[in-house]
Image 1 (cartoon, rainbow, N blue to C red):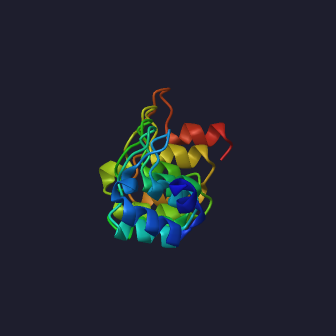
Image 2: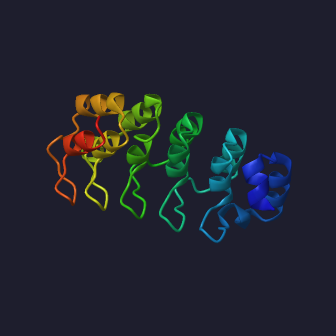
Length: 178
C-alpha cells in the first residue's frame, strides 16, 4: 500500500501511514526500493518532496546499488533529478555495475539532464570507468549521442581511455556508425 501510494502520488494516504509509523520511510520492497524510490519511479515530484521533508534517506541504494537519483536519471526525469540534487542527493554513488548517474544520462536524448550532472561533477567523475571500463564518453558514443559526446569532451573527458575490450569512445562511435 505504501509503495503504491508513493508511486501514484497519494500524498494524504502516505502522510497518514508515515505519521503513524515513521520507520516506513526506510522500508524496502523485495528489490530494496524505498517509498522515495517508488515516488521517483512514478515521477511524483510532490511526493518526492514530501518524503524528503519527512526524513527519507535520499541516498539509499536498492539491491542493484541504484539511488533515487540514479533511478530518476535512468527515467530521463530532469525535474526529478534537479529536485533530488537540490535536496542533497549524491551524484557520485556508483551502482553495482560501477555506473554513475552520469553514465545513465548519456542514454537520454535531451542533453539537459547530462548538463545538470556534468555541472555537479569533477574531472575524475567525468572520467569514471564502470565495471566494464566504460566512461560517460564511451556510453555517449555507444548511444549515438553526438551532442553529449561534444559536451563531455569540452568538459575534459579523456578520449584515450579504453574499456575492458580495449575500445575507446571513438571505437564505439565507429561501431555504431556515429
